[in-house]
Length: 145
Image (cartoon, rainbow, N blue to C red):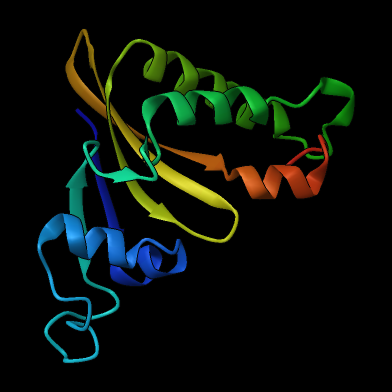
């Protein structure tokens, strides 16, 4: 099961405030009344639904990973290869059903922490995945340019 953690402001920006309030059993006006702040983190699991689809599901993130791969001739930065390899690693960890946690969502990126087993024990790594809308704006161009 995935844990999603977003600030109240991020939830509002995604247009999900009413759905989250309904899911949590909260009054929609708790921000206006000062009972919760814009920067407070809200946690919920992947059972949360938006229009009968899970929001930011593992499948959605895997599809975003696949869409984020840019052909080599389009790379603009010296480290574009590193970013592409990190997307590949994130894709593999998500496909392997490793636990993931959404840390932050901004205008262009989703920041995700993934925990997985290794010889030295559990490891948690953070990844930066471009949002679908941002990739659409770039029309297949390097998102690290």
